[in-house]
Amino acid sequence: MSTAQELLKNKSKDIWSVTPDNTVFDALALMGEKEIGALMVMDESKKVYGIISERDYARKVILKGKSSRDTKVAEIMTPLDKMFTVRPDTTVEDCMVLITAKRIRHVPVFDDDQFVGLISIGDVVKSIISEKDMLIEHLSNYIAGKYV
Image 1 (cartoon, rainbow, N blue to C red):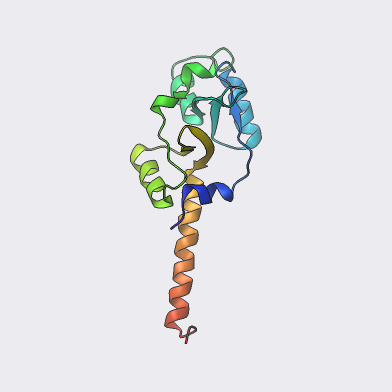
Image 2 (image 1 turned 90 degrees about the horizontal axis):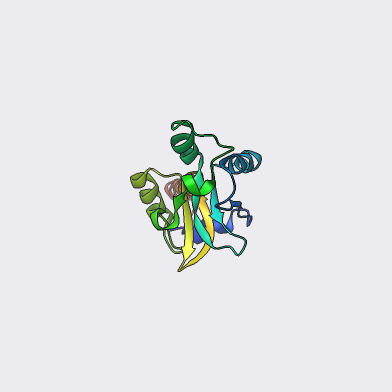
């Protein structure tokens, strides 16, 4: 059974982030450039303040008539104490349960108080499909007698 830590090993080591004082426009520009849907909100010393996603933008800026150029990330981010997180040893299946139950798309991974990475629903789904494909292949080989 795969874990969040194993998912992170297969991802880029780059952690894309913005500061609480950046504008939402800056955050959106970075998300667009990197083709990602969420950013960690951190300061220069890597202290985590929260997470900002495209959903935060849609629900807390556009729908409320605010300007992304005038709104600070701190105003719309999900703060650290409200984030749903997992540990490195959390199974991929448990990550999927959390993502589904809480209707979120990105899950920060923390080892105690240390932020270690961010996994997405796409990472989780790819891992689950890969494991199922491998199981199907092994079962098919067993049924076909390839292990005799």
